[in-house]
Length: 180
Image 1 (cartoon, helix red, strand yellow):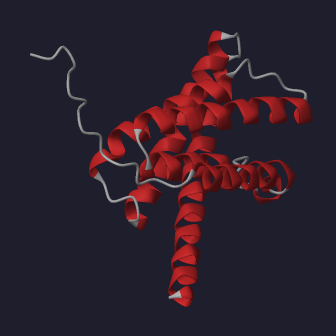
Image 2 (tube, rainbow, N blue to C red; image 1 turned 45 degrees about the vertical axis):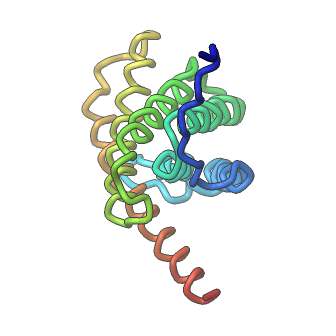
């Protein structure tokens, strides 16, 4: 009898290549920092970074989704804090990683290419991310009296992020059809 155990069969990775996700995240970060503040509505700014994280989390396993969310959130904390001078205490890192964890763990039973699934995941992910972010900031001493304002802002942001995700999916589908 052999002391070696047979390795369990692993399912092959079917998500996007790491370099595709990295390019998408880099574009989302630059666009977020340079242009998205022009699209604010009711003090809510859409987040292409969150859309990128949810897109990746829907298409990959939980471990990769969490790592991607951690990197994306850390980039937002570093770049956002450097530009605005506002310290978030790692709030975006924690919130984006938590959102990637939730979306990645729930996505195992969904079709990742479905526009309604992506838009719903982006909307729910936005609300969850904002909840975690403001919870982290409140633990650091941020005034709790602004909860209503931030909830209103999060609802608008969820709507805008979902619309952006749906529009991006439609554009990508049109591009795929033209190539075919």
